[in-house]
Image (cartoon, rainbow, N blue to C red; front, side):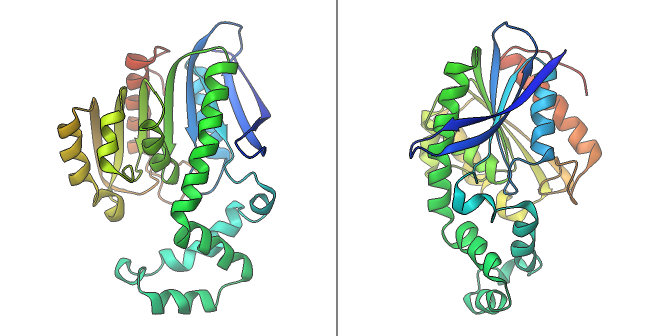
Length: 272
């Protein structure tokens, strides 16, 4: 299917213009929409590729850059985030919450790295709450201004958790969660009315630790939910530009995503 793409600005709750990437079929007909929520790295080549592939399958795919504010845009680059987080990811899991170890790592960090760590680790809840507000405005734009029909969302890592949380706050027909955290209040699952699919890496301890509670509450609240765990894969296995990319698992996950959206949103099933 022939597609077109563009960069645009979407105004959010505090008047900020959020930089946004959109890809869609190149015609004037209405299509299902999919809100694409970024990883911690921002709207990268990977996220743009996801949007383009969804557009080829008949969806209007919109990805807001959630670091668009002036004080964030130049600081929260992919390179800066990697530099800031690499020392923490290199620590054994049991050391990442140790305050003395954290202070030692931060004492060697640059000023930019300290700012990023403070936001994504220590002020994470506030950061995500602000992102959810921005996503609500992006949601409104996508489903009111873009000639869309049924409503979908997909998110990865940080964005997977945001997609899950957002699905408890606004209406989606289909939500796809790639290795994302559970909603902060697990009983908010009762608000979800659409179908949800969770795709998880087998070797992803921090995320997978929440799966037993998730499954218990999926049953409790009768959520239309399916999931798949990919044994032997690591967090972010779906990102073809990343170090954890797993081609067979990613290829299968694309098939799962296309099938799930075709069933719940319409659009084209099949393909690679």
